[in-house]
Length: 519
Image (cartoon, rainbow, N blue to C red):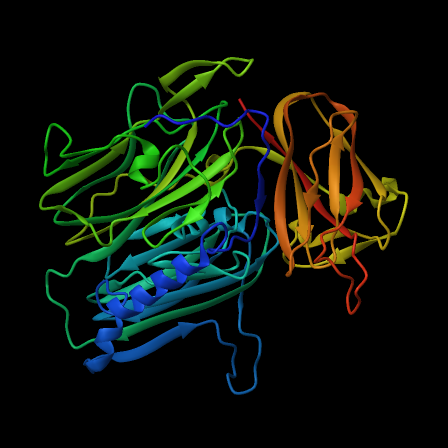
């Protein structure tokens, strides 16, 4: 599908918290909720109508509860670098009904560095294998609150809930591995499941497999799934990192079923497969959505999901799911030179399906060093002695939500303050420079400039709760040596108030500077 391209100069600010009501008519959402209640929100077991029937099941939970449970409040586990935490070893026959995680980790990108696996019965290979964030529909190690049919994430992207049904005949073992060099200080979890007298011998098991190409390989489509057996395909999560400017998503989806030499199902464009149109923007629906969308420039990131719960794609012998990596190309002046050309963007995906028997393993998980683009992180608390400010005071705040566990807080009770933060770049390289900033109830509005460059537009850092945002401020070749970030306060949101006061807040919280290499 063709689309109108946004201006290459447009900037996109990505907040760590997204509201499902944002930009959507509230009455339409209320109507949707009412319809779901009337219809019983039915997809398999678990609809409201099922509550009238008492099933022959026994409820169980594996959790991180502290011991002794009567008096302990140490209800979490720690995961050292390289360590695997076994969340539960469940004896079947049974079915996992709900999974909940929340995590405090030193690694800013723990959703990418924590790998979630599920092993069924006595199988040596996992039936589920994915970085935790990608499994929950948010790629790139980012965090985002959203709601859809099988997944719900709340608390500014920190509370993960999964409602996929995961049956098993003999047993199920759930694990999380910390591939980061940094410690996970607190991993909280629930695994809610039921045991049953028996399961049919041909019960289809739930599977999810991560795969990536960084960059996409020339001359062939990107592979999402390739397996043999009988089952149905139920979903896709696809993440992209732009290796060049402009629109990435003209690629069609092609699905080969039961050994067909031509696709049985043929698509018309990437955003069309994800049930959207004319490009991407952030939105969340029950069956499809875009959880991350930064824009159309080099280094911008996106993640989309499409669930086939209501329209599962059946296969009796085999299925192969592919998508082209085609898009537009522009020259150095932003003029389009092609609307349909192969691109070498970074793709990462998770395929979701149910099938009988043991699936064919088609995509071993690459190590973290291959899953993440190289980047450097500059912790602002390390340069506090060099920071200058015209108004207010400065302190280092501790908190698990920040990179390195700390941020620099500028407490400003007057407007028009200016702050300068210097940092050193070791070598000249082509990069995307991002700022990790905090948003809160007493924060102000700032413009930001790198060195003598043009300032950004006003960045409103107000949020009713403590939240995070990532702001891209530079893209291109950055020279080695000293650089300075200049912040200038331009006011505050009418909602921004100091604690227990009606006076406006002009606070600023700076977490870190990130410099990611780009082609």
